[in-house]
Length: 148
Image (cartoon, rainbow, N blue to C red; front, top):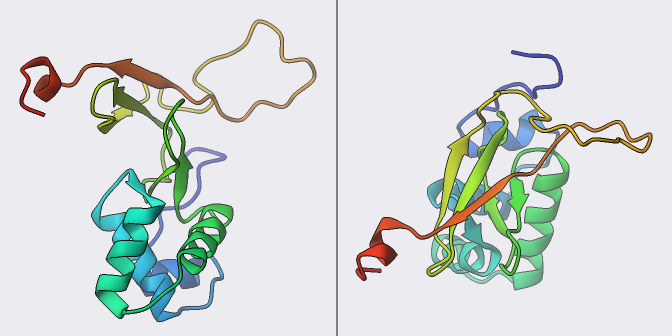
């Protein structure tokens, strides 16, 4: 593990929640499982999956769970320009995203340099820069062939 890289988190939802100091609840387990099962998932889709798993839960409760999981480094929030926020559990590495301009499909792209920040500005203005967010844009194969 390189300095500044968070430790690998457990794959079991309850263990993952405990590892970042969060109380284990059925709702949080369901939220984590929903994000794990569908990388780059929208919050409203998480809410649907959580309701399917455990029954009634408010949209706000799902948003609150996502927010605290992001704050604790258990879940990563990405928001490509012009898109709603998306969530993923791949947090222990420096990776980027490729977004289809037509269907909004999102794909993980490994960082070419492997460490953060992978880009350096010509002037840091006194900031201590620890991350560069890279989003590649293009047209996915399905949209290229009209099958999306």
